[in-house]
Image (tube, rainbow, N blue to C red; front, top):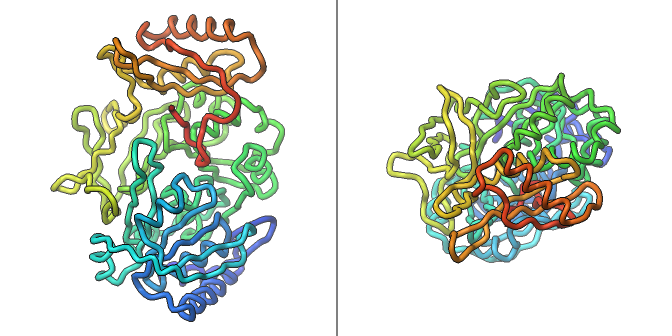
Amino acid sequence: MEWLIERFRTAPERIAFIHAGREVRYCDMVASIDDFYKRVLDAGIQRGDTVVVLGDYSPEVFCMIIALVRNSSIVIPLTRTSVVEESVALEVSGCEWYVEFDLAGRHATITHRGLKSDNSLLNEFRQRVTPGMVLFSSGSTGKPKGILHDFNQLAEKFRKQRTPVVAIPFLMIDHFGGINTILVITSSLGTVVTVADRSVVSICAAIENYKVELLPATPSFLTLMLASNLHNQFDLTSINRITYGTEVMPQSTLNRMSKEFPNVILQQTYGLSEVGVMRSQSRDNGSLWMRIGGEGFQTKIVNNILWIKSQYAMVGYLNSPSEFDADGWFNTQDQVEADGDYFRILGRVTDLINVGGQKVYPAEVENIILEIENIQDVAVFGERHALLGQIVVAKVVLESPEVVDSVKKRIRIACLGKLASFKVPTKIILVEGALHSARQKKIRR
């Protein structure tokens, strides 16, 4: 990663981070990386040692990660709201060293844990004498998987410098998309604007205060932002691009985004922890069709499932067999439609609801329900049924209180008007609170 540090040196006075109102320049970043690297060496952290870094986005947390990468250590970034329990993560990856940052993200304590993992993939990887990074899947469909990447390979695609932007790293630092975002911004000598939390208010306030130009977000967050109407209470005119991914975008949400942000480019992105984040181009602002690929990536469709071959693919799972075929192709488990070189994501195979042999895509039902008056958010999922296999269940959050029977009737009428009868929710549950995880991704269960 010396090339990245050298790039930082070329723009010493440019602002790299705005964290808790504090501006940190690229010259400060270089000095901080050097200081942390010295602490790493003084502590006795060796090449190939597994090192947990606990913290969220801050210039110091990022500089510590780069210092460990410089040392050819294997970094396991975790946050205090990680989707995987820390004990589970450490059992899989091991933890020879533990770096904990305070809540402000400025001061780090380095502790020797000595928890060595006799993992065959890790042992083999150590022979490369190259930095590694372990990220964990959410485990929403089973046990969380430890995903090992060669960090040098992961970062290689950022050597080509892009136009610098002021951006908020929306996805968390223990998420592949979060690591990708922060590398995109800093490798281009842009400015990372951190937020205390990922609430709509905090995000909108940060955009207004620091003239943020790029917001990478999830459809769940954008749906919530539109429902709250908070975007109209802040000056968001600095934004020129909003990217969205990690889950299927409801067409109704995209339509509203196009209307509310007519001068903003709305770009769908696509990536997986196993293969990396691909270059993408939406057909237009109101379209869910996109082209994906770019240098280092190949795509194909097999039985309506998207497969990807990537030069930036993971080394492997620490606790699960590889899901790549003999030729290096990865089954994304995403069902798609194709139109020339454009794709439209329909949903994950694991999210599909099977009603008496008929397939139901949750996003299709959610899209209809989100168009109904007084609906703030909805999550659709399958529930076991003795005769049909599964039934469709909709968990709904209202904007304002309403009689339960009235809501259920309106939802069923709206769905019957646009969907086949087997797709209409059999059960409708009214709930309060968020329907998404700490990573702002919809929870369908």
